[in-house]
Image 1: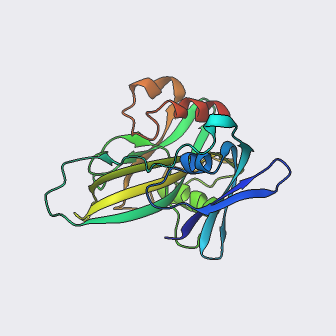
Image 2: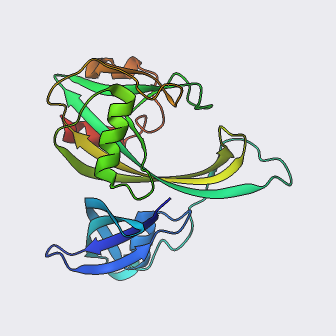
Image 3: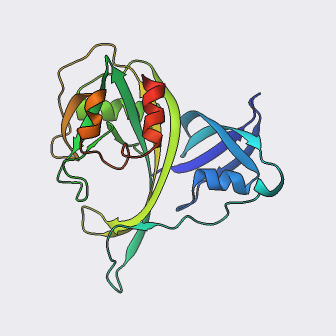
Length: 233
């Protein structure tokens, strides 16, 4: 996939730090190691052979500066056999939080996701090589739900790192960097999963007051999801 670059900018737009996000590294940790704290995720775009994630930053002071140089430990989804070859893989994905008339648009994971079959998550997925993330999130939402997005806005960045077995059976040291957009659907279309045979089994508008009883994937079964809902509502 494309290289992921982090650009930290001041309020007036000056780039004060610029680095490649190495495999297994956490963006917030890496910014802290360079003396900055992230205040906002402002933009993501393709440039040359990289995807640039532009973030607002402010300097850290005193003991806070320079922390976070460690590589976060990867979660291990199952025991790795002795002598197994583990392939390092970094992936950029884009997801949409779409709330309309008291309901949120979610997709159900298929049997292609071994540890998530039947769980519900945000529509979205991998950004293709050289693809602008704003294009990628629109494409993924249409492929998984049949909906065309209107206005979108980047609101968060989430990095996850784990070791596990891919659907191909191959062992991977896997890092996914997820861009979270809030989005609108100006005109609801019939829900259709165009990506037949992929990771999406179903798509549905689910009432917000029914979410507590909905089996949820890890992406939305976390504290930050509540903040995304507030921003998207």
